Length: 122
Length: 478
Image (cartoon, rainbow over all chains, first blue to last red; front, side, top):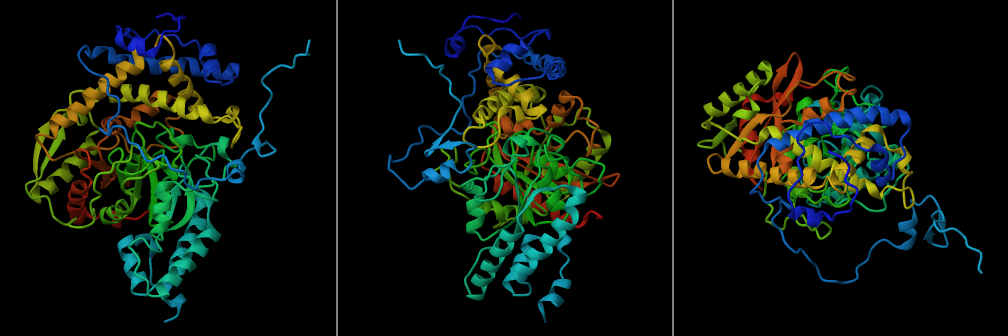
């Protein structure tokens, strides 16, 4: 199975035909997936993980034996629906408490690295 | 009698909550004395066992004094008052470091308690420490902890099981009388059975998940481990029930699980799912069949049944669980608390990659959606079988406690250790693991699985068997 580059919505896919996972030759594009997951792996880690993950995917592919044509996917198992509560303000963590574990704070805010580049005003 | 004299008469390694509670109520022991005895054991053994990541000596002593004052004032307290507990380091504890067994949270001190913890505190239980675990709950041996492996008190060269490795070792070694644990794919039942303990995986939603560091949210359940079935029921009386902070917590009525626990098993129908016994290690099979003989003698009816989708459980589990893990671990970015993502250990990284992959565009149908369909078939298997029988009995683990280092080079090998436990999580149903003997001096366990919210029945069946065998009396030599 090759990597699909288009960005299909999972909801749309759920209505279509499930793709087959038959065969155990699934390749993980580890650079692409680690980028999605915001992980940085060393070359050594990639070399270790790749065969391990492919072995796991090979094992998982046994699900293709099961005929699920007429089976509804299970959403959740509690049977509970629309659990709501009154929208009332109640005591909760104060600002100091919420910031207690933050490595960097600034004027009562979490401090993060800048994500926008500075532009000189024209 | 002086306090010292009285203390000498109590052997805490054999002590249960039921007995300790009587000693406290009859003023034969002070809570402070009981807590000191356990703290002494925690400190003496931790170098050898590595069961605890954090020991809460000062807080425990302070709490103990407070409970002693309440008792001196003549206040009527419940059966958990003054009982030394250990807490798996996934449960948020206000003011006490909570690491999840990972270096990512090595310095994290929660500012609130998990619901289970606040309920135990309200019941005046005493927390003696936070226990070691496979980081984030990922593992079946305790070896994935970033704080070193925990050792099995029955054989120090062997694993205590996981992921609730430290909780199992803490209770089995007599360092506390009970411990909290979680069960996403067997993390309570398997270590309980590796350490001769009783471990409950409650029905999904029976116990609030609020404040417990999430692993796989549709599978996570909050359990606990004790030496006896009765003790186990006492704790569920406190932890079970609706919680405004967890919308998946059931608002169904909470039973008194300890009441009528001695009802017996006369005419109870016990199913033996054949898929769990095909090819099972002969010694483990023999131990379980012997347990069934005892239940039969007590009046239970044993019938063979089939759960045809059993063999797909691990495959479904290793799609659903890493997918949810990858989502839950996305929040660790080192901005609001903890360290950055570079601190994740190998197993967490593996699961994040696997889950991100199976959820990624183009693969969702083939993996996650397919798994959620087979998950329904697994749940339907159980629903069908519970029309014929009241409970099921089967093994907890395909192996005895294995040697430290034996399996940790091959992840798939380790994943297959979950083969008998994952299906209860996928189906959401409760399961009680309890000791059924020893093979080569290593503990073996059985699990009693029942329909949704059947915990009371599981305790009754477990209690009937336990009273005939009393495996809990065999404590480790440490």
